[in-house]
Amino acid sequence: MKAVILAGGLGTRIAEESDNKPKPMVEVGGRPLLWHIMKSYAHHGVKEFVICLGYKGYVIKEFFFNYYRHTADLSIDLSSGTHEVLNSQSEDWKVTLIDTGPETMTGGRLKRVAPYIGNETFCLTYGDGLSDIDITAELAFHRQHGRLATVAAVQPPGRFGVLNLASGGGVTSFEEKPSDEIGWINGGFFVLEPGAVDYVAGDSTSWEQDPLKNLARDNQLSAFTHQGFWQPCDTLRDKRHLEQLWESGNAPWAAWKQQ
Image 1 (cartoon, rainbow, N blue to C red):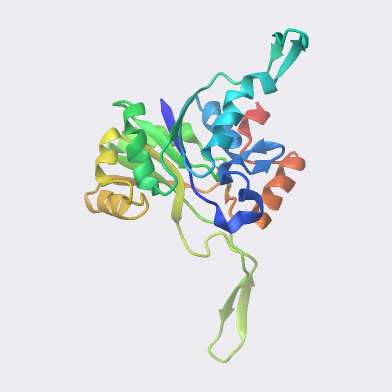
Image 2 (cartoon, one colour):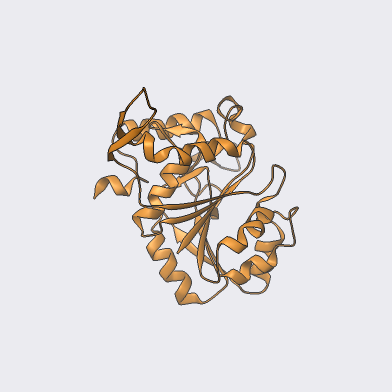
């Protein structure tokens, strides 16, 4: 099975980091967000990836092109330029890197990589969010319900405390940053059948607009509810939070470290 990862956006809300690299290459614990996401999928047996490139896509290409050597011990003969790999910590992944254009919308990127997916069930996600979602369980849920698309429904972490007000101007209760502040939202971890791509018209199509709306209209969209950890990395504040979790040794998304 393959996982398609959307990694072509600008990341304007975290411009301090993404001015010089794509947002999925923002690092947490010395590794790009993209690497963390792929490790999560690989933990569930999904080790083939199709990555949709756009803004500064060459940075992602260079990362994977040199990954094998960067994770290895090397012996180098400087006089001849030859080298020998002594030991490598590289992953057993197959990564396909496709330039889907700098301005292409999310649905358009998916449609552009459709030839590299094949006629089989596949996963789709964004390159800027971390979660401890059970991919294996979502896949089973998707197959059980038999629709073209399944989306992980999550409850975003609250950013503000909520006041419950009485009619006389008093406060009846206060809840600090409730997780269900705005209900269930699109968590960005999809399982799709190839037929779901037919709902994308072209490059200017946003996956989150007409395709998802029309899949829902046709009763072809299921929701897999995930009540565990889910955190986008949209701002420097988000990045610092993820860094703190990683450094504490309590990163919920890093299930592979808990084996």
